[in-house]
Length: 449
Ligand code: ADP
Image (cartoon, rainbow, N blue to C red; front, side, top):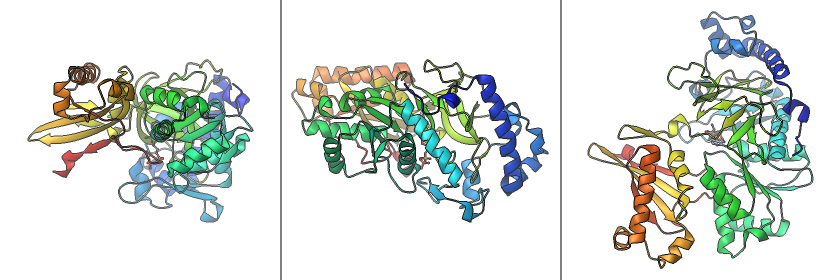
């Protein structure tokens, strides 16, 4: 598959390290000069910018955390005066104030380049049409994919999220080769096509670039089959730039995404101690921007859990690859003392053909005991086989096949995750669906009590 910037994407490791070291030195000197937060952080540690000679010295620097961005809201982390900004974005910030990020013209250029690399890795080519169903607005997804697609020379349909009927119509009429959206919204679209009797072969889409929320192979399979595409993972976060920090290669699809390391230096650290972990070990992903000007950021604690490998991948790219995110540390559920991520439960579903990865996790507390209920949809073919009953506890008790299925799911989760859960089988189409953006699959009712 052709790369967007082959020379940079296959830069031999020693050259890449050299480039990173040089850029890091510049970036540290730059923020020390321009961002009071960093000047103070270095001063407190007794560090001068010249003490950071390269990436091997990074661990000496303190982390930057989301709280630091909140404390300096809105523009306190910016390194340029506002006239030098070209754009502002912000993360959704479900509680309180959003996290604000800024870009210079040059930053937007880098943003477009890394997204163009990602799109090319995902199968995109100049001249192809991209149906961009990421939300436009303060969220970095829509405009981020947009800029990258234009840079690559694609034809962009800036549809944004939501208004599913319209999306289905335009995909049929315009016949795009590629779609960008959240994996949960891709599931929604696949279902809507099916409802209308449109088969995957009749859908023009060949590639899907999906991200902004955790997902597993179970969902990849359902999107691949439902839309007739080869889906790859795009990862990113607004604090670092937006989507396009890393992307899978469409010919690999092993869950490992190339991190565009000449711009974003990755580390994985111990969630408790913050100590750097060796490649292959799971911990918190931490990024240092190497080239950003408006809001450079040192050692940003993403809260996302994964591991990285620097083994060169089959595509010939030399950049490190990160495994699929298991979840943010905030997404971790503690149920009767067991730590569990929704993705661990989701991953189990791939092996059970009678169910589909449409589910909701409901947490409740009876007295001192937490209960995790997995409300899980049965697959359409199985649903027809059992005579399309309205599923309820009584119906499941009465039908051996359903009772067995419920036990099988519970057992697989127990074996893989180490947790006893209550499985409730539910009718097709009744779990929450994405209407365009990120989908919340967990309802924690314990906090309400
Ligand atoms: P918000 O904080 O509003 O969600 P962002 O869009 O910047 O704003 O969210 C970035 C976060 O989304 C990442 O830190 C990560 O938790 C999640 N994310 C983004 N892309 C992926 C992906 N491909 N897989 C898993 N999680 C992802």
